Image 1 (spheres, rainbow over the protein chains, first blue to last red):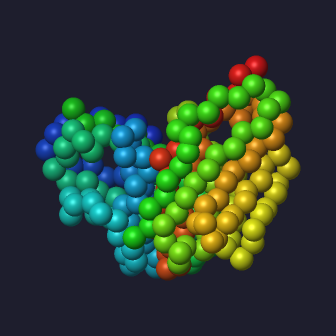
Image 2: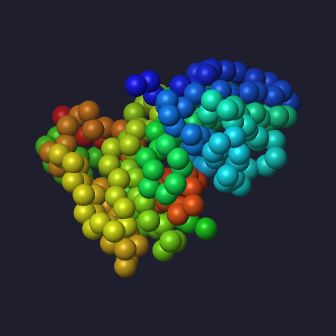
Image 3: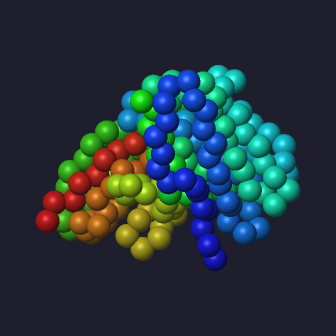
Length: 114
Length: 112
């Protein structure tokens, strides 16, 4: 069974631009969550989607947004990029998102903002 | 909200020795505690997890213990091998969803 797939793996953007990252969850998984990983802040939760609805949200500014499609694939968008947005963005999926459901991470998308 | 602390931040052990990583959590409502291993350039991989109705769980060389009263849980790796070298993250689970709070990570180095 294929794992969580994230694209692109690496990208470089300029301050002020926007970026869209894509995530395909494990087949059959309906919950997709996004995390930002930086050396200074560790793994921080961005948001979680289930059945095309945002169900949980972390403490990130409105520049960070996401959506989920009917096939459970998800995208996250960051607008007006700042240097501090440089990070590894990880997508994770689980069956239903209820407590205790194992979440599986993708390999991540490395974003560098210059 | 939940807060998860993790110690130590770095740990070096000799091959064959045991390694122990400890985490504490603040929210007594958390009932699920997974551990992830992240190798360089890769996403975190689940290695073991424990639910609050269980005190200990073991999977070959890896074990996790949970003390609900003290709100701490620990990862134990026995007979460490060089391939165990990685960053390990603990996490505490919210009852309503997937917004797990992760600890800051422990960089484990197993020296041959």
